[in-house]
Each structure stands twice: as structure tokens, then as C-alpha cells.
Image 1 (cartoon, one colour):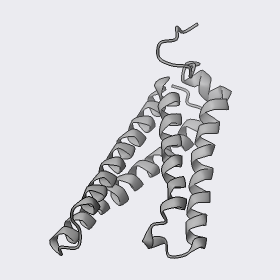
Image 2: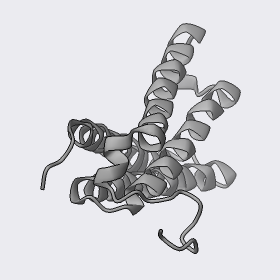
Image 3: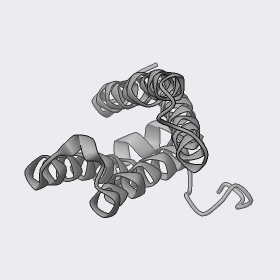
Image 4: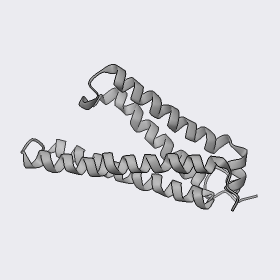
Length: 151
């Protein structure tokens, strides 16, 4: 299978995004929840939000790995799912500007994190939407819905 060079780059980016969500969100979140509950510092609504955050990270990690494999295999669904997960990740990154997690400390680190993540997420969306070689490799999948007939 003759893969365009964009596939190698996108697969690497999705692998990094997936492992980041897995290690930082799922595993790191689980350690945080367990340690805070054991110390009696986390309960009720805070516990609910922490578990919900870990579950969201698990969904994002699974989605990242799915898009990574689908891109590598040349599946047409990789474009739509890649765009969906990149935009979902972008929404969650922009939410940092509103929620301001305590671990960021200052405005500079927060803004730098959001800008870098936004460049990556919107870059992925741009490549998946507008790159002709990638569209040919993935089978000219039209991004108007699964119900639309292929022509």
C-alpha cells in the first residue's frame, strides 16, 4: 500500500495524543482519585467530576487510537472521526481558558498550552479536510454523513 507521507505524520500525532490521554488522563486521573479518596479529600460532587474526567480521557484515548489505526489502514471513516475527535479535543482545550486548572499556576503556561494544542488540533482538521492526496488515499470520503451515497 503506497501511503502518502501525511499518513505517517498523522499516525504519529494521533499516537502521541492517544498515549497522552491514556497516561495523563486515565492512569494519572485514577491515581489522583484513589489517593485523594484515601486521604478523605475528595468526595461527593468533586469525586463525580474526577471520575467523569477520567472517563472522558478514556473515550478520547480510544478515539485517538481508532483514528490512528484507521488512518494507517486507509479507512475512509478516519477522516470524519479524526475531524470529530480533533474538534472535541479543541473544545476541551478551550475550556481550560474558562476553568483554569490549578496546576497551570500562571497565565503564560495556560495560554502557551492552549495555543500549541489549538495549532495541532486545527492543523489536523485542516489536513483531513483539504489535503487531496490524503483524500485519494482514504477513498474520497465525503464528510456529509454516513447516509449519503458514494458517487
